[in-house]
Length: 119
Image (cartoon, rainbow, N blue to C red; front, side, top):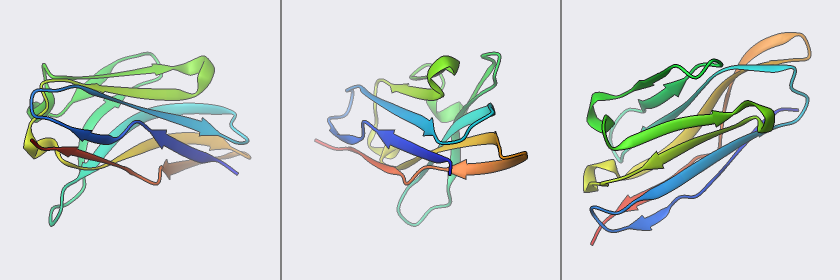
């Protein structure tokens, strides 16, 4: 069974930095795209950043220049480094990955980790 296990959320002051990580575990043949989404209270889940197997990245306009997404294919892990954090970055951050397991491609989600930006 495949699972995405996230870590690294917490409370940070405006202007601060925080790093998130997400490890895919279980019976994994290969991983395609990995991504981070977030959902603020009362809002829809939105894409924050996406990274391909080869390392090509896509960032939401709201986080460009502040956030960096990276991955370690050998560890089946994706990272999100967040800097210059703003209160509007507050929300639950979810890891997402498209994984080939047991002969089928599926879209997997982590359980979510809370990020709160507040003074």
